[in-house]
Image (cartoon, helix red, strand yellow):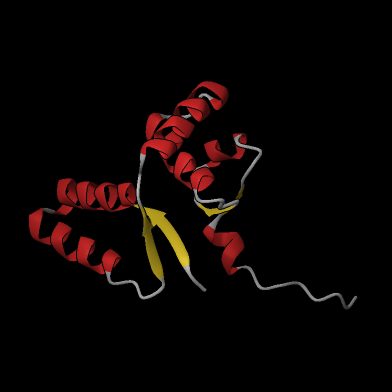
Length: 110
């Protein structure tokens, strides 16, 4: 399975770790994120920003959330992995939580 994220995710991870645990920890976590074998980074480009503006206006999401969704729209991605329930406002995508992703499939047997 290949997973996608945008370049803002690296910034968010490194920034939070830097604030909480310091420079060296941020370096390690940034490197760990970039070394995930099936993770592809998507650029935040002009098309994504224009879509983000539409999302911001239509769904009243935070600017960074709007940018993440703008990137998904620009890359024809319709399913996202997120713990952020605010993203459920965007009807064009399907949000899956980690708990849902890890839930064993139910058998059709009764």
